[in-house]
Every structure is written in structure tokens, then in C-alpha cells.
Length: 187
Ligand SMILES: [Zn+2]
Image 1 (cartoon, rainbow, N blue to C red):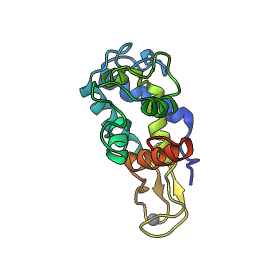
Image 2 (cartoon, helix red, strand yellow):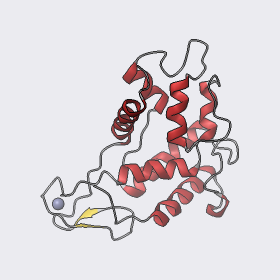
Image 3 (cartoon, helix red, strand yellow):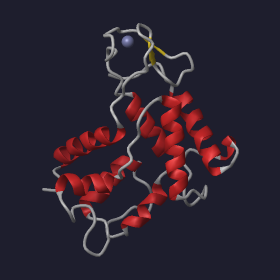
Image 4 (cartoon, protein in one colour):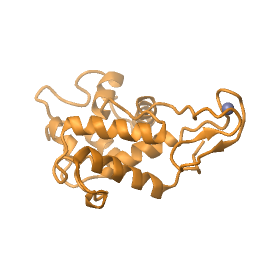
């Protein structure tokens, strides 16, 4: 596991490029710790667009379901968001770990306010997580010869096919299950 072919600098560069295109800005205007919604003016449509661009650039599939929806799907309705639309304590613990403990994230805040905590760094983390699922061997021919001519897309040096990564939703769910178990959440 792991992926040494795509550097952190390349991921940052591609995230800035994708966001700049989606938001019609210069790449230099995309601060990695800015709020995509509040600081950069991103809408939910822009999120879909930047996600698609990153998937194309790296040959990966990012999560399309929010972590809050994963909590409710996995542990049951009301586990992430209570009947008034507010975040539960356990959901806040998950979000804090997932989003790097952003200032202002607190129990009882409304779930629709969570999107403002998403930063270019959050997207870069999703990319890193997907890239780290690179299998040891090519799933098509069994060769152990990964290469990346452009530093973003990884191909098999044996058969030429693109690496088959695990999709972002599967990875997010696996992470969530493990994290909840470790911390004793959603019991
Ligand atoms: Zn191959």
C-alpha cells in the first residue's frame, strides 16, 4: 500500500489547478486552507466540477457521499444529525478528525453549515487517500511495475493499463468504521 509515484507537491498543484478552473480564478488565488465556499465563493455545483477534474487528473474516484451520510447509512438514522437538524456529539468527533479540527465546529451546529469547513486541503486529503489504495500488483496482468510519466496518473509498465484504485466512498466508509470502533462512537 502507499503511492510513492505521486508527490504531495503534485497533488497540491493539481488541486489548485482544478479549483482555479472550476471557480474561474488564478491557481495562485487558491489558498490551501481557505474555505472553498466562504472564501473562494464555491457552490455545490462547483464542488461536483472540481471533484470531476481531480478524478480525471489522477485516474481516481473520490467520495461522492458526505461523511455524515455515511454515518447514517452505517450506524442508523439520527446518529449524525438529530431531529432538529443539528450535529450529534459523535458526528462532531468524526468531522473534527476528518477535517483537521476546524475552528467553529461544535456540537449542535446545523449540518448544512459543515460544507463551509471544506478547504483545498480537504480535497487534497481525499486525493491522497485514494492514491494510497494503489495495489502492490497490477490487477490486469499481475506486474509490479507502476510508473507515472506525468506524475499524476499511474500506469502499469507491463500492460499499460491505468492503476485500479479503491473508490473514495469505500475508503471513507472503511476509515469511518475503524475510527468509530477505536473511539467507541455510535454505540
Ligand atoms: Zn498490468
